[in-house]
Amino acid sequence: MIKSFVSRCIRPLALTAIAVGVAGGAQAGSLSIGHTTWVGYGTLYLAQDLGYFKEKGLSVELPTIEEASMYMAAQASGKLSGSASTLDEILKYRPQFCFKAVAALDESHGGDGVLVGKEVNSLQELKGKAVAVNEGSVSQFWLNYLLKNAGMKMSDLTIQNMTADDAATAFIAGRVPAAVTWEPHLSTVREKHTGKVLVDSSSTPGVIVDVVALNCEVVEKQPEDVKALVAGLYKAVRYTQEHPQEAYAIMAKGVGGYLADPAELASAAKGVRFYDQAMSEALLGSNGSKGAAEGVLKLANETASELQGKPYNVSYADLIDNRFITPK
Image 1: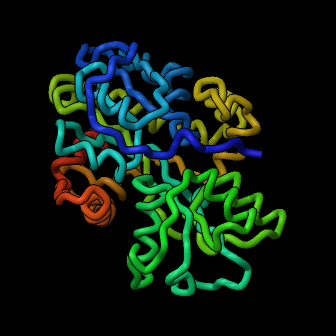
Image 2 (image 1 turned 90 degrees about the vertical axis):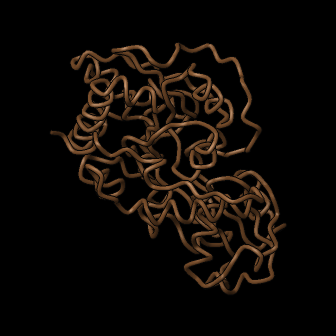
């Protein structure tokens, strides 16, 4: 059974200067990338362990910081070169300092879902009902996406703010009629027949997607290091495709935490898709052309504006630099 994905929750905090014990950002031949504990970041560790970065002259540090506001603060102050996060999450910080997404890492592909009673067959049937979801998180961003596609809006529901774990617990206990959560709770409900998964993220490819975002100064002053990072990631994804069990064992050792057991990580990996070069290009585009992320950014701007109570208008060029996606 996969352990809780609690570290992936987003708890928005003010962006303040928080001291984090990691190496500084802009240093030729070196990158430091902060991240939470998440299976999708496993290819960073795989490329590091197999020497794919080192063979290109790049040293990569991967400090685990289990709070988005903290690693973004460290990145803003130059204590980190960048971070690994979802596109919708980092967009909220882009107006405060300059960074760019340079490569896609993974997408949730079945790992997130909406739990409902067995009698519910559509989102429209939840109108006016309580739905447990972590406000300000990727779960609410994804729910907003689902609702818009169904011709609905967040105000059509009665939102009860809970972490993804608490939302699942409340649903299973019968305290709420619906909940937005992720694995292992989706599997638990399926196995115990305590409800059903109305929709999961396998039906929304390219919406919940993690990227590597580097500070603009790093991108401009260390282009060869960015190329080495992206090339190493692509090579790690190929290794994962060809040698999955060996890859998961290495990833588990690096990612650690609740994914330290290779079996746990392999199980968690079923709910994600690791992005190779072609998938990254399809999402982020290449050499100035836009990709499918344009729609995600539009929704992320709308969602952030609604939740934060102020307008967000982060452009494609503001957030994405796809010069490194396609090898030259």
